[in-house]
Amino acid sequence: MTKCVILQDLTRSLSNTGVWQAGKGEVGTAVKVALESGYRHIDGAWIYRNEEEVGQAIKESGISRSDIWLTSKLWNNFHAPENVESALDDSLKKLGTDYLDLYLVHWPIAFRKEPGSDGKNVYEKQLTENPYETWQKLEEMVEKGNFNIKRVQNLTANPLKIKPAVLQVELNFWNPQPELLKWSKENGLLLEAYSPLGSTDGVSKSLRVPEVKKIAETLKITPAQVIISWHVQRGTIVLPKSVTPSRIEDNFHVTALPEDLFAELEAAAAAHPPQRAVNPSKSWGLDFDIFDD
Image (cartoon, rainbow, N blue to C red; front, side, top):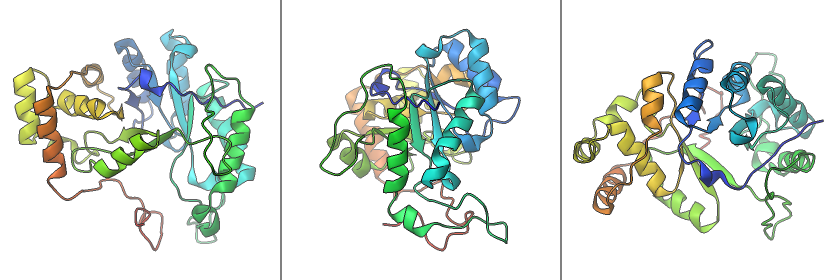
C-alpha cells in the first residue's frame, strides 16, 4: 500500500543536499559523503533517474531512515489522478522506503502520460490551469500514510483538506525573489532554494561577486559558505548540489552573518534585474513562458 508522509518540522534541517544532475555512479557516493558529513535531508525526484542509487546509499550509510528527511517529486506526465499513486509507488520502490517525508509537485505543468505521435509531450491545459484533481489525489495519498509527527492540519477557507507546506523555487543571488519570500513568510509557506549558488553555469559568477568575496575574507569562510549562510539567514531551506566530497562537507557549515554584512549582501542581490537560470518552457515545446503571470 502506498504510504506518503508529510512532516511539518522541515526547519530542523536548513542546509541539505540535492541530487539533481548527479550522474550514475556519482550520486551514491555523494549521498553517503553528505550523510557522513551531517546532512539529514536528501532532495530527489523521479525525473532525476537516480532514486535506486540514492536509496541504496541511504541503506549502506547505516543512518536510520527515521533520522533522514527524504523528498521526491511528482513529474509532469503523472498529474492525472489515475497516474499519481503509481508514480509515487515507483519512487518509493526505487528508494527502498515505505514513506516520504515530503512529496512535491515538481512543476506546475501537466502533460499527458504518453507522448503524442510526434514523440513530444502533450500539454494538458485544463489540468495545468486547475490542478485541484491532482491535489485531491495527493491528499488521498497522505491519508493512506503513517505519520512520524502531527500532519498538516491548518486548513484554509478553500476546500483543500491539506494545505501546501513547501514551495521549492529557484533562489540565488541573481534571482533572490524578495517579494515571494515575504509573501511565503506571511502565509506560513516554507521556501526551498534550488540552484542556491546559481545554476551550473552561474556558480563561478556567484562566487566572484565582490560583496560575497568581501564577506568571505572578513569571516574567514568560503564564498559558497557565505551564500549558503545568507540563504539560511533569509529563512529558506537550502539545496546545494555537489558530487565532490570536499565541497559537500564545506557546504554543510553555516555561519551567522553579522547583520550589517547580511544587509549588504541582501541589498546587492536586489540591486540588479532578476536573472532566472532554469526555465524549461522552450525545451518542453510550450508556446508560453511558465513563469509569466
